[in-house]
Image (cartoon, rainbow, N blue to C red; front, side):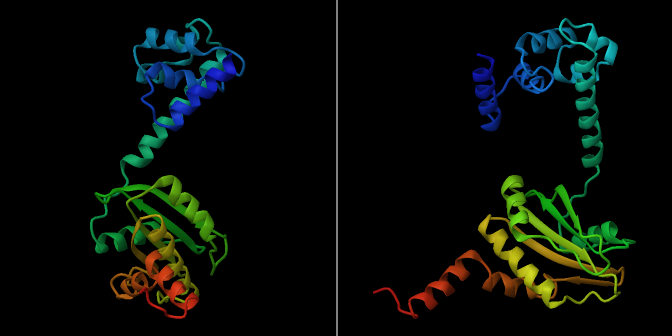
Length: 246
């Protein structure tokens, strides 16, 4: 019975199906009680502390005063609360990037002083707020390799409105290499497939040496050639020998 109930609760969570506070807490406690009905404990916690925020603000001893909550469960809840607190601290100061000058300043702030080559993806909402920063590094001086299928999966999961790509050159020269150009073309195509706007790819070398694919006009050229529709049209022309619909 518990297994079927848990599956139904997971489906509600997956579909964002208007879960109540006690249901959220009930699902959270599945990991703390692998073989036990967590509904009564979830209700008891909410009755004791009044809300989810009250549950997560409680100390270990207070949590253990609730029937069914032992030390290990109390520690589990406290750990989740600490994760939530730190996540809020880390995201509360994330920037709002409204123009390409701001993109460059933010990339410089993030990449200045790095001792290995780093690639970062900045996921933006429609108002320019950075929703998430996704960094990659190969721990090598002059190379960072990121698989395009991995980025595609991240975009599918995050569903951002827009994306800024940034990476550093340790040589002091910010001009893009052929591999940088290829990667930017791949990123533009991936973004087009996922209906995400690629705002820029920035290469940081020094505070005075920062290359922007957008500001140099290169990104617009890539968008013309590497949108999903453009690639399909090109392949169709080659496949059918340039024949037009009658």
